[in-house]
Image 1 (cartoon, rainbow, N blue to C red):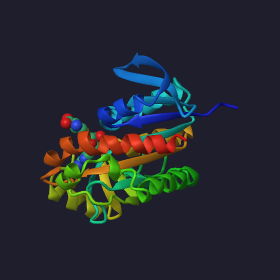
Image 2 (image 1 turned 135 degrees about the horizontal axis):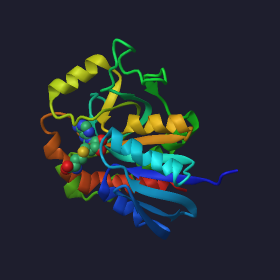
Image 3 (image 1 turned 180 degrees about the horizontal axis):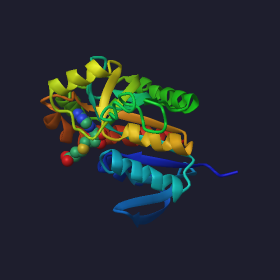
Length: 252
Ligand code: SAH
């Protein structure tokens, strides 16, 4: 039997720094422009790494975690642009399904179909999803997330009570920064809650290697003309803190 080892893949360097600070018996291995931090959190073996951005980079990083470090589960955290009117900045989206919105091999296969898998949408195993939803809902119920943010920052980002929303995430090699792109995506994929650049690629690798995974995103912007203004401040001041608290809660 293989022993449990959790891969923690983060799309924000700021968050990785916070998670690495939680590690005991820390070791570092540098390979392929990535630094893998190996250690334990609450006596559980973990490997923490910055995914790098985009589908190719994140798929490569997760493959390395599986093949070289033998992870048995994966937790992915990062930020995303809100697409659905159901989500607001500061909300946490947990993927129950993921789609690569830029995958289009028509006419040889259906739009969004992953070549050779015959699937368009991938979903994490139900048990890991339910466990993540329950754990993060607990964090929210106890105000453990909002408490990490000063009142001034709560005001700056109009944060009051972040909520957990479970649903579809779309990924692709594109940063969404206008309403046209947003509308266009929704007309093709009406169930999408948010967009980002890694999740569905990571899900594909985990599916192929049979590694249970969960993809968790804090909404950092509204994927419109304000995206770039909202983004950097929010990542450093809010999302990275949420990410560390989420990882800490999940690794128990
Ligand atoms: N901080 C970087 C940019 C990061 S790239 C810089 O300043 O150069 C964008 C990251 O945020 C990716 O991890 C992506 O998954 C996520 N993301 C957040 N909002 C997004 C949006 N509106 N569209 C696409 N990806 C988004």
